[in-house]
Length: 445
Length: 185
Image (cartoon, rainbow over all chains, first blue to last red):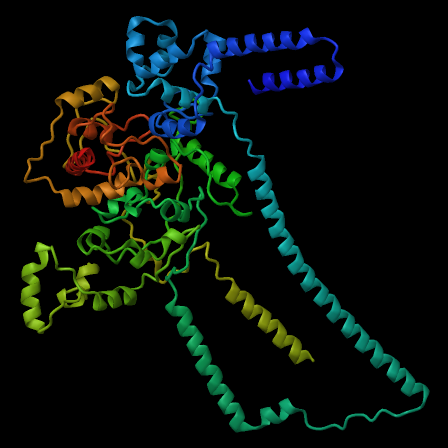
């Protein structure tokens, strides 16, 4: 529409300059008018506001429709244009469909039935509350060109080059320093050599250093010093040996590489998904539960690409390919929005693993005691790759049982025993240890 | 000079041993027989199981203890049937809004928002769009339909039946109805 105006203006100014044919202007205006009229009758009966359309689209349509991707319903970019071109259907048809699609299917509308059957007989929710203006807004939003991701890609590339530049400059400084040192050393050797040559040429005698007893020999022959050194070595090696044996079987800091890169930082941190959403059995059973892939698909049916912050190492492509891995494992055909039935197990590597001679129950700690997951697992919401935060040693368990007071408030289970035990110990608050949390048989049987 | 070389070599050996601590592999175990008993562990991988997984689905045609059959399919017609027929087995004394809220905040609020207005964190961050508010008159909900959707999912929403037990689902459904009533005020 704008273009036709501009062309008219352009032409009129041309005409004014040349003054060849005055009628030409009128003819152009007429043509333009016809042009405008044809357009206005076909698809621009009401100008929609794309910004309003976006919010309407997001609240009413986006549950099932995306602009560029088939979801529960078809992709909707240029839907009005497409329907007009391919099926000869106008905005009235679209409005009727939006307001009550199932009635149209029943009435036997050919295209309505075709769409209905193509999408597995899932009836679209009727939206009779949408006004003509609302529909115009939504259609204006769908008629927008796809925003080219050039700018963001460029910015990403810039950031990447900036980062790599930083790396290069660091390397450069280090390399220059190394070269400087080599040059200095070479210079000193050469100076030494030339000086010796001068001395030889001028018959100057360089005095040989007198043969004194070397320091180390004197050291070895001093028995007291040797004794002290021996004791020192024995003690320090005992210290290190003890340290080594005490950390055997302790996997603090263990950070295995998983088959699918799962970032707890993005899921639990950025998006704030509750730990127990995925690890639901931590509430009710011994194990915290490795979520089955259908839990992933609860969100990833809709979330098919990563749109958050990226770094050089963890780029959008990297994250997207990990989501693809999930789709492959669960057998989800993202293009056609259906399960193929071809699944393969993901072999997750277990991070936290207590030895089998120790009994630990998640539900006792999560539901009964009401502990935060982070108390033992650390700041999981900040971990790009999960690692074991706590040592999970017996000393660590015991220490917590000694220090933690039992939450008795709103917990009938503990009321009676709490009363009796506080009388026995003469204290106000009971620690887990005082309630029997240190008994061997509680964890080892 | 030779002593210096020896010290240097020793230092390199020691530092290489120390730096060998690799976080990607688990540590050595003292008496591994006691760490790993012959019994099968939860989520363990053993040859005897199909797909080497000790985590298995219940045998077809059986019901796990404490579970019951849900007599409604996942289709739209079944959804409509659940909306009309399905009633909560909880009476007013059994409905526990505190626990319902707790569960709702874990499993629903990320998308539906803590108030049920469809403005959860994922929606605000534009990761998932189009979450309706519970007071949406067009997509009216009742207890039966909420239970059906939790069990089977609907459109882009997936099933949440394996995260919540039967009783917990009804608690959540009751809490959602409370949110709906609050929104309609």
